Length: 181
Ligand SMILES: Cc1cc2nc3c(=O)[nH]c(=O)nc-3n(C[C@H](O)[C@H](O)[C@H](O)COP(=O)(O)O)c2cc1C
Image 1 (tube, rainbow, N blue to C red):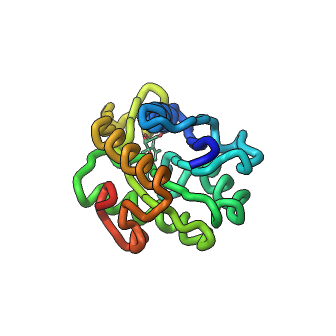
Image 2 (image 1 turned 90 degrees about the horizontal axis):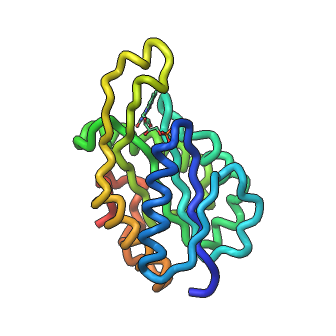
């Protein structure tokens, strides 16, 4: 595949940026040339042959920088391989992942031009000392599964490299798995 891969992210407290970095590292390990940027800073997608866009979910809404990115680039993204992830339930139990996935899919439903190759939900991070009352009463947790994150990035690398629906994600909008089959 000619051209670099963009990994863009929307974060409030940094955990999504760390996941984006791990995904970028994995893509690089698979021989891809990768740029990683905050989604709000990306103005031009023309250098990119593939895009990963991730964002934290807060109060049922995908991060506004991720939503804005998809809306701003919806036409370019209609013609570019795209992989999407959302953060992040407090556990990766099916019930929690399903709820977060529904929240993410609601945001994706507003940009039907974008037909992602893969959609994933990763567990999130709660650091109570960074939050205001009453959220600072939530116990600290980190549900990120780095092996699952890297495995997903490996599948994305494969899909981007071969330019075919290697992840069998055609019906992704109704799937509930954390990672594509
Ligand atoms: C006030 C608050 C609301 C949240 N709402 C949701 C939510 O609706 N769905 C979800 O999956 N995660 C939710 N989360 C979890 C965050 O997505 C998680 O903490 C994530 O790792 C934050 O990413 P960031 O560090 O990149 O900002 C919420 C967290 C906080 C503190």
